[in-house]
Every structure is written in C-alpha cells, then in structure tokens.
Image (tube, rainbow over all chains, first blue to last red):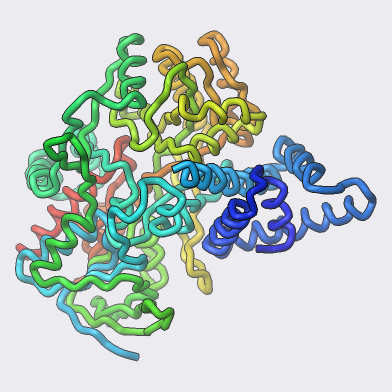
Amino acid sequence: MLWFEREVVTALVGSDDPAVRSAVEAFVDGSLRDKPEHVRLGVAGESILLGGYAAALRALGRLDGDDALRARLESWEGGPIGVVRQYVRAMKSLVIFAENELATSQAA
Amino acid sequence: MGTLDTEILVIGSGAGGSITAARLADAGRQVTVVEEGPWVDAGAHEPFSLEEMVAKYRHHGASLALGNPNIAYAEGRCVGGSTEVNSGLYHRLPESLVADWGARYAIDGFTPAELGRHADRVERELGVSTLPGAPPPSSAMLERGATKLGWRHVEFARVFRYDAAGRGTKQTMSRTMLPRALRTGARIVADCRVQRLVRDGDRVVGARVRRRHADGAVERLVIRADHVFVCAGAVETPALLQRSGIRRNAGNGLKMHPTVKIAGRFPHPIDHGDVPMHRITEFAPSLTIGGSASRRGHIAMALADTGLPFDEALADWENISVYYAAIRSDGSGRVLAVPGLASPVVTYKLTEGDLSRLARGIVHLGELLLAAGATELHPSIQGGPVVRRVDELGAWWDALTRSRANLMTVHLTSTVRMGEDRQRTGADSFGRVWGHRNLRVNDASLLPDAPGVNPQAAIMAIAARNCDEFLAS
C-alpha cells in the first residue's frame, strides 16, 4: 500500500481500536495487491497524484490531521472529476466493508 | 519442467467444469481437473463474510469491468468456483430464450426438451428445492410488496438440501459433483493456474501450468492431454484462449446483468444470514427484482453509495436489507488478455437504453419496498436522494446518470458463443472451439446472451448436454 493510501485508510477508519484499525489496513492492503495489474496501476497513479496534491496542501497549512483529510475526501467524492470520485469511493468501500464486518465478528 | 499425463484435462471447477468432470469420470474416462484457486472447505467461512471474500473470491470480490460507468463484478476463485460463493438460486433457462438462441445462432439440438432432460438429471443429483417453511423477513418483504402492487412474483428454487429441522445446506460443487468425480477416479489439482494451452496444428496437446504448493514453492508443469475442456468462466476462458493464440470470436460479446441497488430500512428487524429467495417477475426478462447479501458490511457499503451521511441509518442496520434491480442489457463488453498482465482487461459498454432500464428498475424497486413497508430508501446513486415516500421516487429518474450510478453484477456470460454461425460464434453447437479437433469450452462463455435469470442452471444443463455429445462422438 502506498503512503497516501495508508493515510486515506487511517482517515476513513472510524474505530479507535488499534486491532480493528490494523485489520482494516491489512484487508485494504490485501485487496489492493489482489487487484488486476492494470486497475492497481491506475489506483496507484491516482494515489501518487492525489497524495502529491495533499502534501502540497499540507505544506501550505491547509490540510492538517485526519479530519481535514476526511473532509477533503468527501469533497472529492462529490466533485466533478469522475476518476477522483471513483478513487475515493473504491477506497471508502473497502474500509467501510472491512470495518463493519470486523465489528460483526467482534460482536459475535 | 515436470509433466503429467491425462486423457481429459478440465480447466476450471465451477458449475461447468464440475459437471464436465463428473460426467466424463462417470463414463470411465481419465479426468484431471485443474483449478487456479485453493480448495477451501465449503463450511469454513460464513457466507458473504470478509473471510470468505479473501479466501474464495477473485480479487477479494472487487473485480471491475471498465466503462462509462465502471461495473463492479464478483466471481469465485476456489475449488467449486462461483457455486461456492453464490446464493444458490436455480432457474431453468426460459423456453422462449432456448428457442430464440437456437434459431439466432443456429445451435444444433438446442431444444427445451433436450435441455430439460439434462436439467432433470442435474436437479435430481444436486437437490434443488424451495424453502420448506415460511420465507425469512428479507424475502417476505419482496412477496408482500409484490402482492400489494399486484405484481407477479415467485420463490426461486435453490441448489439446497434441507434436513428434518429445515436447516439448509447449499449443494456447492465441492460438496457434490467434485467428490463424485473423485470417487470415480478423477484427479483435482488446486492452486494450479494454466498459463497457456500447448497447440500442435489443429490439436491441443496439453497445457503449461504453474502450481503453487502449500509451502509457497511454485512448480511448473506441462499437463499432456488427449482432450481439453476449458471451463474457467466467461472472463478467464477467453483470456486463456487468447493467451494461447486463439482469438477468433473469443472475448468479444461479453454480456452481463447490470444491477442497481437500494438499502431499504424497515420499522422491524430483517434477517441478514441469507439471500432472499423471492424474485419479482412482473417485468421479466428485461428487468428482475430481488434481494442481495445483506451482512452489516454490505449494508454499510450500500448506504455509503449515496455519498451522503449515513451514520444514523447504519446504527439501525439490523432493520435494513439490500435489494436490487437487474436488467438484460443491450450493451456488450470485451475480455482482452494483454501480454505481460496476468489478469485480462474487461470492458463493458452500457447503452442509453440500458441506463433507462436501470432507472426504471430502481424506481420500480423503490415502489415495491415502500409498498412492503420500508420507511427509508438509500439508492446506489451518488448524491441520492434518500426517499421516504412514493412521490419522491421520480427524482431518481434524473439522478441515475452515467457519472452517478454505482453498478455491479455477478453474472457474466457469452464470450465464446456456441452455434453453427461461424461469423458470430467461437465454438460449435456443443462447445468445440472452431478450428480445433479436441478443444472445447463448457461454461458460461457458451451462452449466446445473458439469460435474465441466475445462469447456473443453464450452465449446468448445457455442460451436461455437451458432455453427452462428446461421449457419443
């Protein structure tokens, strides 16, 4: 998983439980590794571009902490650029599915 | 490089491959089945769970057909193929479709009576039945909504056997046809990916494979065979043919059932362990309405599809279930094996008519769920809106656009169509690949079109029919 992908997962996971956070990260990492090469390449390319943009915002003091990144992801998800919307949605789906399934397992 | 000899090599162990292996082994033929995925005990994981996604699905269940919009799809990658991970719904190919496909693609011996004969036997062997008692609430909601609206509906049979207490066990291929094939002498090699077929003129003489052992070691083998049946599914079958230099009518014409979803919230708890068995057939075959896997993870994903805040709804997840509307699509797609890439590129082009049908489908599904008593509907449309009353459903007509629709599918077919019309088919009426004496396809790839219903029954009946023809010839 690339550095920005890890940042995105960290920002999106709602649980404070380190075990859950770690398990979600492992699932997303496994899912990204398991994607078809051309899809993985596309996701990685977007991660680098968006990660670079996020780093620039951070350097300007306009993106501090997980809350700010989460808000930025939400704005990208509702934004006009299709591939960026899909990127956020794909990452969010993986995190949401894993976190909620893990919550079910823990409850059981 | 090691070698292994067999009379018949079956590549893939899903619905088509398992039927093929069992029928041919029953007839005394020496059969070897190779499966890319692992052998996972059928009861090892809860159905549709995170663990099952990791263990049994290709790409963790998140495969993608590229297009505008992209369409997510899921398929099994384990011994037993997608029969290990699907809902087990079983629906014979409608007779009108059999007649239509037979005529349009000039398929010899493709009649309702002939397919029915094979379906009868498959159903006896597997155990196909309806639920012995009352349907669970998730399924009863479909029945209730349809009854209120006066829409036709049906409880689909499933590939399940039930014990005296009414507990059902899905009759997956790893529980049925594959053990049967093993008992009659077949060999099953799991974790074994076929890289390419080895050809000699108009014959295929074997396959180059990579077998991964439990310790992680990779063994390269050539499996020599007199006859080869490729049964790796509608994506991997044409990809393997292309990697082997067989490209004519292999991979184009991919068909599927594009699907939109709604997370429906009810004022009472809904079950989450099973998939609803009722289907709304009022608009069939162009549009079918049914229920999806609805574990907490699926519900959360469905709620998130709108991109709107959903924490309040998710806190009430036990009262929510996910339903779908699936269409028969005018569009089509392509599977392309790209040199150097292990996974083929899959594309799908949705037509304007498809988009219109999907919009109609999600509005009808919304009507049905509200009639069944749902209090809140979250559509798989970016930006929503969330609907609570029938008069609000009209907003979805305009909201469902290419850029806002979140689509998925589980049924992929038609990438090596069968029939005698050589311009439009990749294999003859019984799956023999054109130009090759001993190479056959025997899976969902052969179906000339998406059937509008779960294709498992059609795949099995056609595979059994083709095996009979092979044995007779």
